[in-house]
Image 1: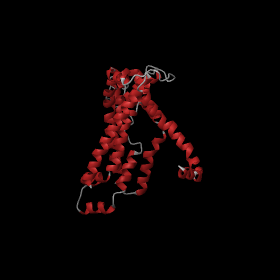
Image 2: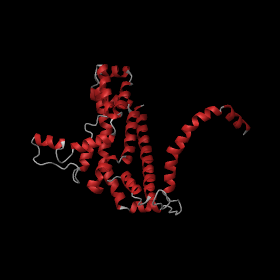
Image 3: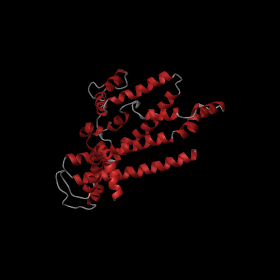
Image 4: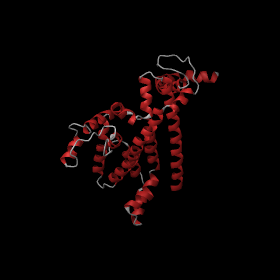
Length: 299
């Protein structure tokens, strides 16, 4: 104990310097999820209510009896699985295209253009697409009528078309850092390996599947894991469109949001958060294990 006190007295300035950051992490990053886990075991209907009525696992039991919650998973997978596929394969596709551009200056320009849209908040992009999909004078309806493909306007944001419209949103899905992360992995492939592949007469497609993928396991793991996490966490479009189509596009995270903001059940909302956290952890662990086994095969 004396050695510890002596060490602290000697280095107290360093500890004082990191104290604000440590307190910030504890208050804003550690405390909320821990408190949410505690809340999930209590009957709490307003955030100001105290933890007086212990419920045990009843909030979780009620959760799986809730038809809206079960349906929200169906909506989530219908909406997000195609978007996950897009977010994984499209960045790989355009990273390969940029990588095969011989002029390095043009490569730099293309990388800059990919990052440029990220300065715009996602909600602004959603509002732009809301205008594109608009029933009256919407850009997409006007283009389709101009091409003679339709005679009457299509309600893209209506109950029957909303899932497809949200999947197609942000087409051609080029903005973001995922493609740059994949491109960085391609650039780091040893030139000796690429030269040897050329000498052996390895075609572009064969090289992509045999060589490139073996060097991109880490990048694919990153894009896939964060894409899976985004599946369970994202509900930004629901804030804009859910009111007009009801529960058609309800996802678990949005259902949790509505429970909190309508004071229906804070404890039940916390139970949703804890359940989603557990699911994300399990899927992430399984994904890492699968991709690590693939990495060992290539090694």
